[in-house]
Image (cartoon, rainbow, N blue to C red):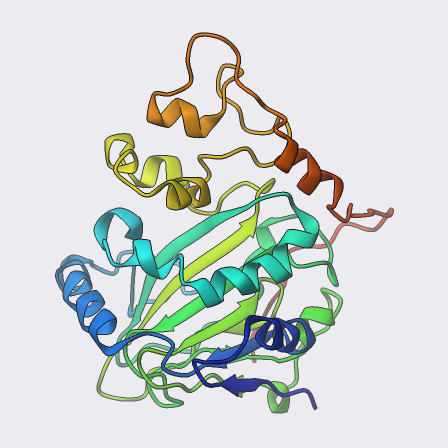
Amino acid sequence: MVSFQTFDPDVCGSELSEAIMRDGCAIVNKAMSINKLKQLKSELSSHIDNTGISDPDPFMGHKTKRFGALLSRCPSTRDLVRTPLILEVADNILRPHCARYQINYTGIMHIEPGEQKQKIHRDTGFYPIQNPAPPLTLSTMWAISKFTADNGATRIIPGSHLWPDNRSPELDEVEIAEMPSGSVLLYLGNLLHGGGANKSDVPRCGLNLVYALGWLRQEENQYLAVPADEVKTFPPELQRLMGYDLGTVNLGFVDHKHPFDFINGTAGDGPGVLAPPDLMEDDNAVKRLKFVNAKASKRARFKV
């Protein structure tokens, strides 16, 4: 049976990337500093208190608070999403299949006592690409509170990123991503997983930051999640990571201008450069996906 690895914060990016590609996931213990964790908890507190539970869909949870737009609501996430180790892993895992990758989703999943376990699923189910497939997204689940088997820690099925869509997991293949607060679970978007049941008397709070190939539609629309005037104050690296960049040569321009120049008011009057040499070089290095004729298949969710 496939398992997964847990690493210390000083793990090198190549070793971590290799483990994720092999097992579909990995944990880095205490990857966030104590001060950063305290600051995040402070920023999130009022938003958690003011967020209700109104989604009738049991998949989203009857006792799970969810909200997004974290780059606007929680300033500390602007650095967290650019954690050097995470970006190194994203480079290793996503860049073979895209010239640029981008933020796909930012959100809180606050599982309260009494919540039931979520159906096992893949995060990439809304992209009509059959599995097994190359990585489309890389997810990070940061433990704002500790994750335990009793309070709803994420349930994962290591190795399932290599399965076909119709392969259902057995109960003994499910593992629990227990980790102390400040740690992070990294997993591929096509890894089967789901939130756990909270049988404790305390909430389980996770902060989910997801990265995706730059030519995919974002799950959370970053251009509307953060007001443009606020985006203009962000560091250039963060602006580009949000999607204010070309996805590849000639992909994502605005009135034939580079989106980074457009948002920052530096585009000028004429057309912009939409095939800069560095981007052209990265585009030429991309491993093109090969599609074959296949029967249609619906999004997979399993009750395990």
